[in-house]
Image (cartoon, rainbow, N blue to C red; front, top):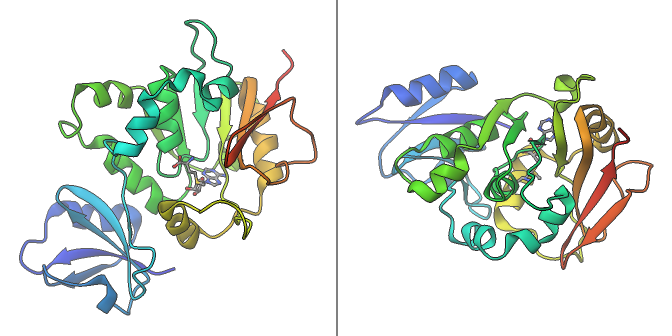
Length: 258
Ligand SMILES: C[S@@+](CC[C@H](N)C(=O)[O-])C[C@H]1O[C@@H](n2cnc3c(N)ncnc32)[C@H](O)[C@@H]1O
């Protein structure tokens, strides 16, 4: 997978240079009116547009572009519409005014983490892909862009770069560890959302599901929650203690004995 950071010929700025240094990626100089479809020397481009960092697919425009924007209307609709009664809240074990501290160990584009933070949870996000981490860091750092209500939710989200398989030790730091690994969708399953399809194309499929679950159990004080497509098999050999099934997804809950 070849990724480059776009520098515009007219106004290349420090942030592009910093990004290419931080991610150890080459830069490509393009005119301000470039079309990603015409770029053939890289598979993806990282570019700043209207103060957002976006990942563009070159050549084939089917998967379009990826970026993180916590003011997305669908995400906020979900966060606002009786989220306390949704399966994600039940799976986290939320009752009364208590809120678990959560590690979202497969942070991706941060949507699930945002939902959990909008429930009032302090959420640590862990992401192992440097490119996805950069998109997420950009979305979280866009201060003054979202407004106070969303900023309050974002203040509960702390991003870390790393791999759960390396990060995990036996120190039980989080009430809940949340996993949403990237797996191939069954052909007949519900539509794969566009940004998830783009993420899958970028990162490929996950092959270490059972190890992820073992590591998550080491870090969780109370439970591990695994998000799966409705008809997907369990992540590891063990049957979960509780399952919450929705129209397209399922939450498998593994309780940790205290
Ligand atoms: C399906 S996406 C998660 C989507 C996310 N739940 C959301 O709402 O946007 C899976 C993400 O987990 C990351 N990931 C997979 N295995 C990981 C690991 N062992 N440690 C940290 N991140 C991991 C992948 O790089 C990918 O970005």
